[in-house]
Amino acid sequence: MPASGAETASQNRMSQTSPTQANPRRSLARTFVAWFDSWAAAPESSVDRSEKIDWLRVLPFLGLHIAVLAVIWVGWSPIALAVAAGLYFVRMFAITAFYHRYFSHRTYRTSRVAQFCFALLGASAVQRGPLWWAAHHRHHHRVSDGPTDAHSPSQHGLFWSHVGWILSKGNFRTRVELVGDLAKYPELRFLDRFDIVVPALLGGALYGLGALLEAYAPGLGTSGWQMFVWGFVISTVVLAHATFTINSLSHVFGWQRYESGDTSRNNPFLALLTLGEGWHINHHYYPGTARQGFYWWELDISWLILRMMSALGIVWDLRGVPVEVRESNRKARV
Ligand SMILES: [Zn+2]
Ligand SMILES: [Zn+2]
Image (cartoon, rainbow, N blue to C red; front, side, top):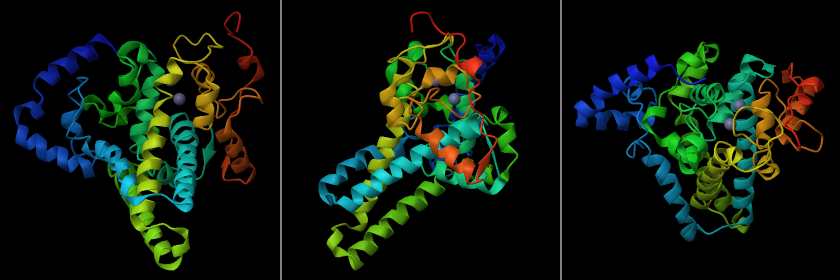
């Protein structure tokens, strides 16, 4: 369902009078503040819907990519690689099982304390706050592959659907109006507004861990900076691009089992990389389930872990896939 003409006209009108264009120095200061307080620039960025990358605002994101080169100086060790891989796995699970299947789609229930822990873990993935993530994702499902879909490869090309959209001026604002059910919790609003806090704590903790190991277990061959580069920088960059493939590649490469009305596809390789998210047309076809691999042979690691968490009583009311839903609306010859 595309955005109404009234909305688009209003956005265009407002962008013409954007204060960011009227006062560049003030805009610079606000951008700097927005690095630390993501809601600070919301009133201004919300009126600028243009598909332009905000290069100043995304300097930290670009810096993270450049920092990967530091591996030349810090080297590697088995322990640093293991920590990087472990953090990739845990944070990918947090993105798929918490940010996506819980906050965006509410496909199971949990306690308020666990909900906060889920948001904390999700925030450690450095993909902004839970409200921002869920709101943009809900919008994606509403208008999937339509003109207002922020990351549709068929509308905006592969680069834009992969990473361009997340860097653009029009997509920085948390669309609180789409996540009223989550915004009522002050602890979630805090994590969303100050979305740099958890990543900063994680980065600092990893440096501290590496420095401690260097002092007390020198045989492991690591150091503060090496652990920071592998555990935070490299792990986070790989995690980001693996997640982004679901918006880009999962709408281009793979098989379409259902008549979902969009370009989403099932892709086993991406499902492995993202712990189950690559069963993407399954998900677009029936987003109300916590399960994305609809058959036993469609490996969905997040679903398996969620079932374990359900058995332990950490989450409950996990929504599965009704057989009649799974078996209907199939495309011919698939
Ligand atoms: Zn999609
Ligand atoms: Zn979804």
